[in-house]
Each structure stands twice: as C-alpha cells, then as structure tokens.
Length: 149
Image 1 (tube, helix red, strand yellow):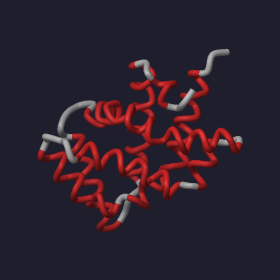
Image 2 (cartoon, helix red, strand yellow; image 1 turned 90 degrees about the vertical axis):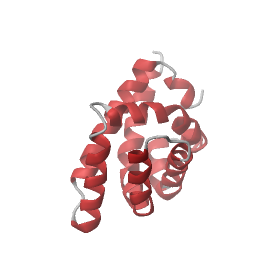
Image 3 (cartoon, rainbow, N blue to C red; image 1 turned 45 degrees about the vertical axis):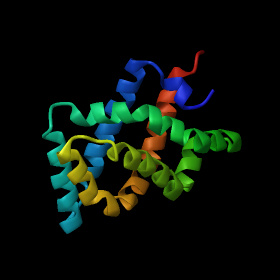
C-alpha cells in the first residue's frame, strides 16, 4: 500500500494538513533578513485570504503530493526507514514537492496566490529542503496511525 493510499479519509488528511500548517508557521517564524522578510510578508498575505486558508490549501494539495512522494517513500520502506530516506534525499524530495505546487499554481485563479507564489518560488527550495526531516516525521507518524493493529 502506497503512502497516498493510506490517507484517503478526509479526517486523516485534515489532521496531516494541520500538522503541516503548524510546521510552515514554525519554519516561516525562523526566517530572518531581507529574504525572511519577503517570505513572512508573502505568508501573511496568504493567511490573510481567510481563516484556515493554509490548512485548506495543504489539504487540497495532499492527494497529488502524497502520490508524487509515493516512489520515494516506497524506496525508503525498502531500505528500512522512509523518514531517513526522504531526509537524505531532501533536494530530490523538495523538487517533487515544488513540482506539485508548480503544477497547481499553473491552474490557480486567485491572483494573490499566484503573485505571492511567483514572488518567492525561486528562493524557497532551500527552505523546503530544510523542512523535509520534519515533514517526513509527520508523514511517518500519520502513516503509523493509519496502520491497522
């Protein structure tokens, strides 16, 4: 069973999305300097769209994201530790995640979302890579909760 197959339930997706939104809040809060200011400003703009926008956006991206991560997760299971595998391959994992958001933004209708994404897209790969260990732990935690005992 692939990673994407484990999270079909809306409640499970919402729980993962909430954890990922918290991770994003934490990651953004640590940013400093001019690039940090740009990221914080962009993030505030997205949060300003509406209460719960970030978790809802993450929830909407989850099916495509989990499907895109399935091959890397499966490789990690084969070598015995998917969290470690995603972490050791954080550049590739970040490319996979950004590919999902790139495809999603190409079909977006909200001009604020498009402009915000395009403004920070080139500079965020390192930030996404830095978040991979925590993201992998979130996925592992929820995957283990989904495994029947």
